[in-house]
Structure formats: structure tokens, C-alpha cells
Image 1 (tube, each protein chain N blue to C red):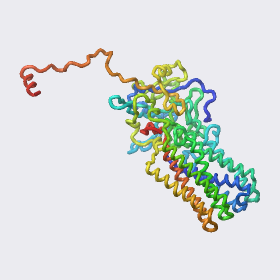
Image 2 (image 1 turned 180 degrees about the horizontal axis):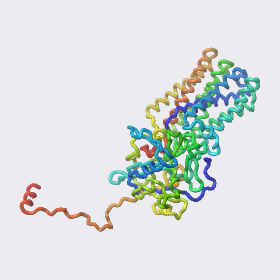
Image 3 (image 1 turned 90 degrees about the horizontal axis):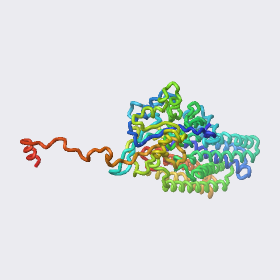
Length: 247
Length: 311
């Protein structure tokens, strides 16, 4: 059924991505590919992986942007994946019922056995979350690692999406964004987390945290403004030669 | 947006078929056309063949053609599904209308009007598939629905005028083709002016949310070669080629079929027949080129993450 759930649960699982912390290492994208190439969405087809123009299905991509001009300019690494929207047009445009939004936790999924590969859902998504798998002939997308987050064979701390588990900088957080008391919701409130392209009206679940204002001074560390020269000025014959040659 | 040949052939060919079917279904019961059985067979066969070829062509766009029937299930939410249901449902009154006319010589106004209604609804659904997509502002606007409806009326009327030349030419139908061609061209020019002047709805800043720190530019793409998103949604056509193709659609397509229809209207006999028979395929060429441009000139919001400044 591609109509949205009539009585969705208040639970809205999703990600919070901290653009202030992300270092752009692509580990989240690589671990996503690694996990999902063997999970429920397998295979994530690669075309000419060792060729001149490698291509393939990925659920997570890290873009890098330059923001501001001159001395004010800064680099922002920007991981992009499915936002598990509250109003996902990718679901409602689906003609077959393959795309659906789960009532119990808000995760948007594709039933690959029903998908006819018409690609309309990828047209309907402004965020580029859906990719067509040419070999399998169906659309694929981020599952929020449903096969990890509810996996009881994992230790509780490992029941997070692969991208979150692997982030070496802890720039990615997973949790229930429908619960105002959850850690992720508090983080969003504290850091003024925001939606991507709110003008589309898709009400994304995932939130992004903005880069913090740039720090202009070392301030509180107590360090001196400038360090003393590393070597004392030479004395005697060497000092005389140094002065002579420095003229 | 990538101009997929299967989808363009579908909407242009089926569009002409539905236009022709709608005109036959509405005009025949009022005796505005020939009620000749052979004319009925020829015109309805042409309409249904165009519709069927178009629908079959659309299947080539799918990754799993054998599951196409599943697309009939989600008409509650999906315009693509509604289009499928309307297309299949239209065959019933159209078939009945044809059988009664060709085999029994009886014109059923109810079957005719129902077939026409089905044809119009199907074309509306096709247009709404594009009209409803917010990530493509050049599709998500009020020009798209009239564009698709008029294109179907124009090509349907041109073919009807052409087929009628073999039976009983009707100046009113040729005049309708003439007016529809002019109206389609005007709406298309209006659409082109609109997309050339539109103000962007989304920018790289709104796509990344980096709205307070000055201009946002792509510094490094996530991958070195093109992926599905760029091949499907990042298709770009050079402005000079777009301008040239617009001129081709306007002159070769709309202009020539308008002039030839005018010749068919003002003359008679062989010259009128030749002009009407040439006007119909030229009109199709015009619609085909404008439909190709409709895709090629459309920009998708996902390109904002790949260096496009605004869509």
C-alpha cells in the first residue's frame, strides 16, 4: 500500500548528522556499502568497479562544499542519505505498492519483489535517496539498517545503522526523533538542527546540525600569543658570521 | 532529466491515439464526421494501434516488465497507477463503440462519450505524473496539464483530418486541427517563456541548509564518475541546442502542420488530401521534439548536491 500510514506511531527513527564534526572520511559511506552489499538489499550492484568509469548502487554519499568567501570560507563535508520523510512522495507515487512507510517506526522501505523498476520514486525524491539497480531491475534505498537495529543477536550498543557504528568522529547519531526526550531530539534542540529543503514539504525525519561559529582565538587555553624563538641567537665567531651573512 | 525514448514515444503516440479516440467518440454520435463503417474501422484502428504501441513502448522503461500489471493497484495515491487503470479501462467502451459501429453499423453515443472520457482522463493522468513532482520545478507548474491535453487534441485532430480525406473531408475538422495546432504552439511558447524566466524554488544553500555563511559551492563530488542519479536526473542539454530544437519544433512541427492544414482547408481534391496527410506526421515530429525538450530542459533538485546552483 503506497498510501501513507493512517495512524503512524509517534516513533520516528532517524539520523542526526553533525556537519560541525564530520571530517569527510567517507567511512560511513563505505561501511554502509559493506553492510548492505551483504544484507537485505544485496546485491548492491557495481558496474565496471575496476574500469575507467566505475558506477554502482550506494545508499550514502559524502559531498564536500565550500561555504563563504575568502578568509570567511570554510569546508563543510556533507553526508547525504535517505531522510525517512514524514511526507515521502517517493512512497505515494509508487504505482505497485512496492514502496512503503512503516507505521511502527517511520522507516521508508522498498519491497523488491513488488517493484517494477519504473524509477518514478527516484524522480519524486529531491534528496537523491533512491538508486536503480540495473542488474536486479529494482529500486534500492537506505533501510536505516533494519537488519541491524532490531537484530537481537547483536550487543545492544551495536544495534545502530552501519554508518553510525563506524563514524570515527561521532558525527552521526541514531535514535527516535519522534520522542522529544530522546538524546537525538535533545541534541537537535540544543544545536538548532534543521531540515534539508523544507520548501519541498516532505518533512524529513533526519536532521542536520549546522557547523558551529568559527573560533577566532585560542582564548581559554592560556597559551602565549607567540612562542619564543626555538634557538638562542648564536654567539662568538658563528654569531659574527651570522650577522655578516644576514646583511 | 534523462529523455527516455520509451517514455517519449509513449506519451506522444498514445497522446495522438487518445486525441483521435476522444474526437471520434464525441463527434461521431452528433454526425459531425462520416458514419461510414470502413471509415470507422480505419480511424478507430489507427487510434487504438497508436494507443497500444505507445503503452507497449512504455513497458520498455521498466526494470521488470512482467510485473507491469502490479501498477494497476495503487490508484488511491499514484498518478502513474491511475494512468494505468484509466488506459486499461478506456479499452472497454472504445472496443464496444468500435464493434457496434464497424460490425453492426450502429453508433452508440454512450460508448463513444465514455471512450472519449477515458481518453481525456488518461492524458490528464499522464500529465499529472509530471505536474505533481515537486523536485522538478519545470514540471511542477500549471503549464504542463494544458500542454499535454492540447498536444493530444492537436495530433488527434491532424490524424482525423488526414483519415477523413479518404472518405468525406470535413472542413470543420481541418479547422479544429488548425486551431488546436496554433493553441498548442502558443501554450508551448508560454511554457518556454515561463521556464526561461522562472525564479528558483531551491538552491544549493537550501539543499544543504548552509544558509547563513555566504555562498555555497560544491568543492568535491562524492564519486569520480557518473552514477545513476547523474545519468537519470543530471541530464543536461546545451542552451544553444535547446534553442535550435525549439525552433525546429516551432517551424517544422507546429508551423508547417499549421500551414499544410490551412492549404487543406482552402483547397480540395488531391492537393488538400496530400497536405492533410503530410500535416499529421509533421505535427507528430513537432510534439516529439517538444516532449524530448520537456525532459532534457527539466532540472531535478538532486543536482543541487552535484554543482547546480539552483533549480
